[in-house]
Image 1 (cartoon, rainbow, N blue to C red):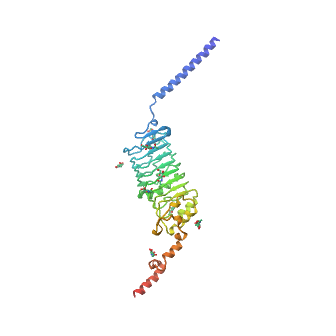
Image 2 (cartoon, rainbow, N blue to C red):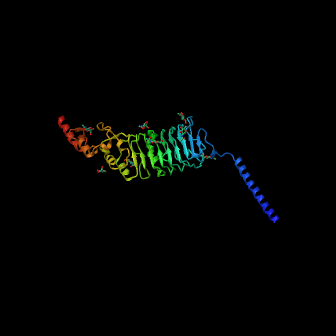
Image 3 (spheres, rainbow, N blue to C red):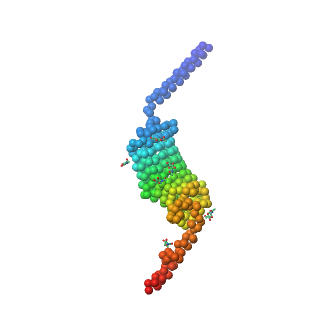
Amino acid sequence: MIWRLYSSDRSWVFSVWNQWCVFYAAAACLLFTPVRADDTCPSSCACAREWGTVNCSSADEETDVPTEIPTWTSTLILKGRNISTLSTRAFTPNGTELEIITLLLPNNGIQAIEPYAFRGLTRLHVLDLSHNQLESISPRAFHGLPELRSLYLNSSFLPPATAQLQNALSAQTLRNLHRLELAGNDLKSIPLEKLDIYRLHDLVLVNNSLEKIERENISSLYRQKRIRVYLSLNPFRCNCDLEAFYYWLKNSSQCPDAARILCSEPESKRGIPVEKLRGEDVDCMNENLELKSFHNFSAICSEPFFSMICDLHWENTSM
Ligand SMILES: *[C@@H]1O[C@H](CO)[C@@H](O)[C@H](O)[C@H]1NC(C)=O
Ligand SMILES: *[C@@H]1O[C@H](CO)[C@@H](O)[C@H](O)[C@H]1NC(C)=O
Ligand SMILES: *[C@@H]1O[C@H](CO)[C@@H](O)[C@H](O)[C@H]1NC(C)=O
Ligand SMILES: *[C@@H]1O[C@H](CO)[C@@H](O)[C@H](O)[C@H]1NC(C)=O
Ligand SMILES: *[C@@H]1O[C@H](CO)[C@@H](O)[C@H](O)[C@H]1NC(C)=O
Ligand SMILES: *[C@@H]1O[C@H](CO)[C@@H](O)[C@H](O)[C@H]1NC(C)=O
Ligand SMILES: *[C@@H]1O[C@H](CO)[C@@H](O)[C@H](O)[C@H]1NC(C)=O
Ligand SMILES: *[C@@H]1O[C@H](CO)[C@@H](O)[C@H](O)[C@H]1NC(C)=O
């Protein structure tokens, strides 16, 4: 019996000793592991690891995207820096994918976005590039962003890039986009070739230079029942080109700021809400009749059919 006790005792002692060994080994391991890049905060940034936030909004003249962005980052804010170009894989230069969900890049003086600039950010939901000075944007700038839900591009384009915008936005990878904001870009047309490649809920086009919305664009808006389009602060020309748009404003509830969409031309209608016009104000039959009123010879004579008569008239009078 004593022997048995001793025996089990010994095995107990051994097992306790064994556990201490494992414990100290683990502790030693922890102590001597070098601090991983993961745990450091990039210089000139403020990090809040518990929120997953890295905020590099420092006022000093940093000219690039920080290297070594921690892998736990879910929100990255770079603001007021001087980043002139977002190059390919700007955020994941070494190929390590990052799980960033929100990327805010306003006011960084960004002038160019190269192909695949955001590659490696496959979980990105929100991208804000507002208030930059884009002069060029690659058609593949937004490739590799399958989860992107919200894209903010307000006041970020200079004229050369405006022409490239449509190509950049046609990326098939933007198929989950719900919200697209394009305020303050001097746009003269909707820079989307098709609406049905997106799942857009909100398209913000306020404060641009839209004078009219094409009839084809209106048809595609009717087809995308879910979409809401914001259009105030555009200089609409209230003539008969606006007919389809006018009926869309009255008919559909797709434009939440309809009451604030005003005519800027002609002079006689300036400041009047488009939806308050009368049907005959935008009726082309009506407008053509007015234009070609028989008091206006220059209008009539410019029509091929009448030009003969006008020529005759001038021959007669000059004789
Ligand atoms: C980021 O830092 C700036 C100051 O450097 C501060 O004003 C701003 O509120 C911060 N943003 C967030 C989301 O913490
Ligand atoms: C690779 O980049 C990631 C993200 O910037 C960074 O966290 C990681 O430390 C880098 N790895 C190496 C080996 O440089
Ligand atoms: C921004 O950086 C570029 C060089 O990358 C430099 O030429 C320019 O002067 C800088 N602008 C400001 C406002 O610091
Ligand atoms: C512009 O973008 C910001 C996000 O940075 C958003 O909060 C704002 O509502 C947008 N729209 C306008 C018209 O400024
Ligand atoms: C309209 O956009 C321009 C150019 O981006 C900007 O300077 C202006 O402040 C904006 N106006 C309003 C009322 O938002
Ligand atoms: C809008 O109309 C223009 C010109 O008529 C056309 O090229 C473009 O594809 C249309 N866009 C949408 C979204 O319907
Ligand atoms: C709806 O639009 C059509 C033209 O597309 C027009 O004929 C009709 O009168 C409109 N209905 C209303 C209630 O405005
Ligand atoms: C006469 O027709 C011309 C050419 O179409 C047009 O520019 C002009 O505004 C018209 N004048 C009047 C008084 O309708």
